[in-house]
Length: 73
Image 1 (cartoon, helix red, strand yellow):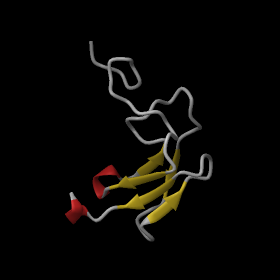
Image 2: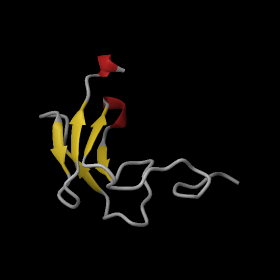
Image 3: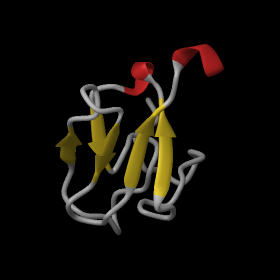
Image 4: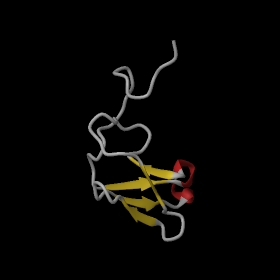
């Protein structure tokens, strides 16, 4: 049986646990909450335009997202 997102056997992080997240181009398109976060205690998924300015803020939870330089790792 394939693993499902959000099951207890995964290493997920709580949604909206931080107020600032660094993302890379490989994470695009950017959505909040991001993949790898628990969804049961979060808001509806919203896509955030980060490519143009390098920064985005979620209108639901206020989380700040910053696009990292891919050369940084």
